[in-house]
Length: 401
Image (cartoon, rainbow, N blue to C red; front, side, top):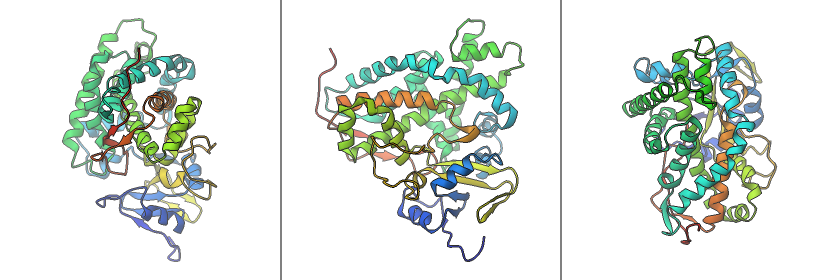
């Protein structure tokens, strides 16, 4: 790196570090990247967009536990074999097998089910005028969507939510301190996945799990181990990111109540509201890639094996790409990076977009004047973030007739 470049250094593990801090935004104005204690941080939209599509870069989180000295045990054995970490032909094969279950043709008919679930959960607290939003709505909604998609008994949603929450600490820079909790969550989700697969063996179900089991019947398209890894990861990822993003959406709208009222009056804006929330306040605060070879890009050589982190929040507010960066659900925007990009673009992005749109739509219509109360708590603002507890108040209203 030439000494003349004004490149900032960011300490991701510093207590209180935040991806949305003035420090990060100032670093973006200094240069298109910054150095960090976990690799190189990409700060601007143009560069994030280009590097996400660069085929010389692999998924950067595939060695995430190893960065913290976690090289054996349950997590270390699971992590390299999940969809997030696999590359090349194996990744394409598994993606091709999974893709049809997440297509618009399959998912669009589920929109009324998502809407009904959202209203059912709101009915549970609307008369009180207060709620703990994460446990009473975001967690229940996200977990019951994924149990419905995979054919898991809906009575297990609370158990799945608790286990996935524990496993979710894997994306934090505190991963080593939280390892016991993380592996407890992982162990539980693996047991649920095994039981689900065993219960569906020999059945003729046309749903997602049934299709994968049929592909596993001869062991050529997908092996027993791959099947378990895929199902366990989909249960986890399908819950964790959606739960966090719904909570962050409510936090975002609490600061822009004019936009909330606009959504309530114009429910057709729900899908664009999802995109705008994910532009300004994504649960995934960075998308990681690793150089498979020495990569020359602009004034930087990224050495083979080096990890880069494409920071979603500074890129989503980059004034070089966005003439106006203010939160506006009616504004047309370039694509955000909240679902990643390239070969590892989130497989479940479409179901997440649909179910979050229905959640925001129902909430805006029925809680038009909500406020977030004191006592809200949040995950660290790095890696994957979101509310832990989000107490709210609103004008009480009747349950649906």
